[in-house]
Amino acid sequence: MSYLLFLTLFIVAPLLLLQLALFFRGKALQSFKNPHRALWLLAFIALVYTTPWDNYLVYRGVWSYGPDRVLFTIGFVPIEEYLFFLLQPLLIGSLFLLRMPTPSPPHPRPRWHRSHRAGVLLYGLLTLIGWLALSTPRGLYAGLILSWAGPVLMGQWAIGGSLVRAYRRPFLEALLVGSLYLWTADALAIADGIWTIHRATSSGLLLGNLPVEEALFFLLTNLMVLQGLLLLLKPENHHD
Image 1: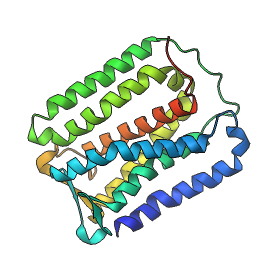
Image 2 (image 1 turned 90 degrees about the horizontal axis):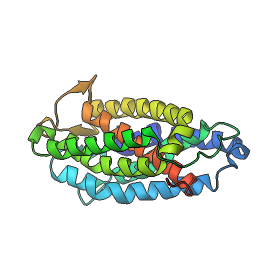
Image 3 (image 1 turned 180 degrees about the vertical axis):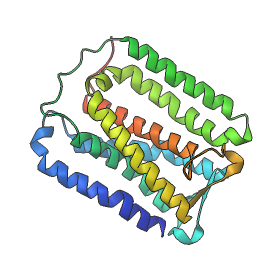
Image 4 (image 1 turned 120 degrees about the vertical axis):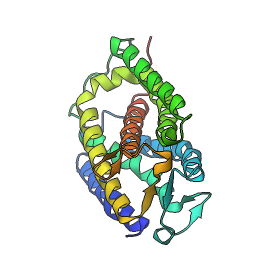
């Protein structure tokens, strides 16, 4: 299977189905200002933020792709990978919007809750673990994931943790379903040889045939997408 066919079957097709479902649910989303514009803005931000990081991963030999499975590369990364950067936020964000309650919960009162402190500390700890992991060859992939995603998640949570609490049910549903789906798709792509995660720069631990670093990557990027989307949908939310 080519990378482009993989994207078509596993990302574009379900995204179109979700968008169709959102079209028929249009009035239910009127409590949010320009949700689709927020989705596309988030996708653009994801592309800009992820591009140099992922190019560095390939440069360092963390992962590679089957040369016969891609159309062409820009830098070190296949063009299909850049499309993935755009499509993943659209897919996970659409799933979240589809699970939003009608009517939406009242806007939360911005304040520092205990969960704010706990979340900031947790993401700060993950960032620190990532920096430490960078010092070991087998910890390179995990370290690059944690040190790249941790600061963003920490900032998002510090600003919008109250929003996550207010919308926790659709948030957790989208996070769980989206992560399980992308883990499954990723495992199939690895088994098919579309891309390869190299053991020299990863722990070698597997969930089935999925490297734990890949599971961590999709979990954290989905968190970044969902927290970022909430901030874009409710940009007036700031803590006191």
